[in-house]
Image (tube, rainbow over all chains, first blue to last red):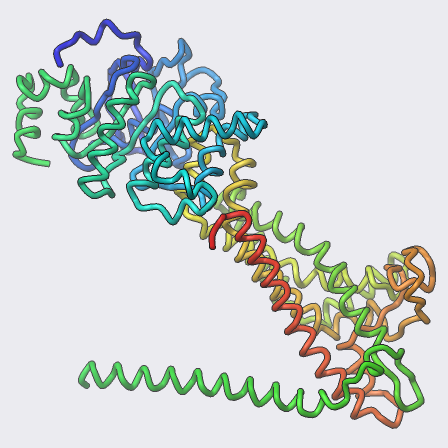
Length: 258
Length: 295
């Protein structure tokens, strides 16, 4: 767990980033580098700004009225806060998984094929391949291969969440953002998603928000601890949990608050 | 008072109110059907009406009703759904949007006779068309659009926001998300709205009196050229609908069998609305199943 982060290319470089909802400052002076093909966990108590932060990375936050930001977030040598960004193109490269699986009310097949279809894949054979490989990547293929044409809403909660991950990786993003992806799932489904995350990091960069510290310790390479909109401490996961530098980090991970 | 007793009383009240409503409906339907159905015969449905002699049918009126309904929906549904999409997805909350919403609500509550007078001024006189099907359809569109906009807006708003976010987060444009995620999910609601609007069109008389007129030219059902004078498909011809026919027979008919014609027409009107609703729902559920892959 103590491998050095510097070996990996930086995907996101967040510099002096601030964010306000109207007059309320929600994120203060954040600095964070997110390395490629690694799992970065964002932990912290409710209301610390961790969900807000992850939503700035694909600019979904700009949908909230009254939000404004300062500072820089470099992605692909572009400053997504300052440069004119094509949101559609940005989000094609940065997929997002939400708290609760949100498949479209369509068939399993159409859910996975949705992104590729719209991004221009027309051939049935090619779509079939993408659907199969995406569903295999999330270990859902064997469970759904006989019901590809039935509604995705008939799947269990855990299956729906894995389907959403399949739908996201079918568009071949560079980064997958996950906003508390297991908070609505039972322990068994949670475990499967965690295993999946560890496998997916070979191909994708993953940023995961979690309120579950054990989860962060189990699956991440790097952890950032958020409190009141600030990053208190961010380092490789092993050291953060074994030798926290800041007193507040220690209090939080030892369960004294939050 | 004991809350259990209160609960029982409330249940009793609601059940009896529901029973009263059902009883009124059943009474109304049986009254219309018992008096009207005996008058319905193949001949009644396939003969043109007669102004003076006994034994006139309702062939043209029946056709006109469906044709005006079709033309009206052809205009209303696309406009109404687009309006609903605008209100739900594009309109920014604020004074202007609230003003638009008030206008829509006001339009929805306009008395249909006023819409008819407006239609007479604009679609009959100003355009110089005279009494026409298109004039009638446009008048009906005026008071159906608000319903359609409102229902579509509500249907789109009830789609879970997570699904919209899912679309946007996949890098799909706003319009594509609306087209491929929101509209299919909102489809059952939009369909219900369209059916409600159709029912109003079918039963409307006041707005059509001065727009589509009280007469129908001699029609040749084999003439399918929509520009021909005698073609039933010509939208620039006057067309008396079934509802208007019932009104005019009752108020100024001079044929000896007024009662029979009115009763028979009323029964046909009610049954047509029923059949149309059932058909529309059946078709709608097939489309919905196909899109959402649900059973």
